[in-house]
Length: 150
Image (cartoon, helix red, strand yellow):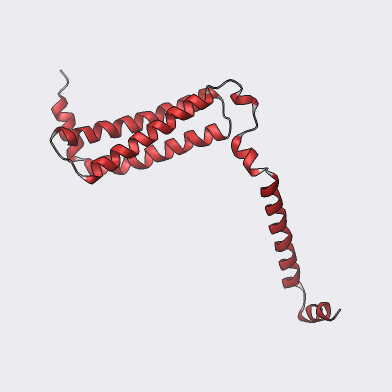
């Protein structure tokens, strides 16, 4: 028979290690889910990453519940619960967005933002400025002085 009290004690005794593992794993998995949706990855890949991120978030909720069960009500428990809830909401909305009709027919969101005319214009201008700066730095001092006189 499964002893739940053993699991609760384990969770409370190793709280620092569990939180040190679950918090970054949860944040990185949720970030990866958002990036996959932004890059219009196939729905199967989005679902797989969303499932992994949801497991991390649910484990964090269960870990916080072990503290609530013994009556520990402190700021870290609420912060971890809030973090897990936000990650669950983000993963759920990513799943809903990726299930929309025409999800894979659109230009990926991140590519569309990166290739917008304003961003391209900024990239071209900064590249032009960089080329002008590097050209003036590579000239000899006499060439730079001659260029100012003309």
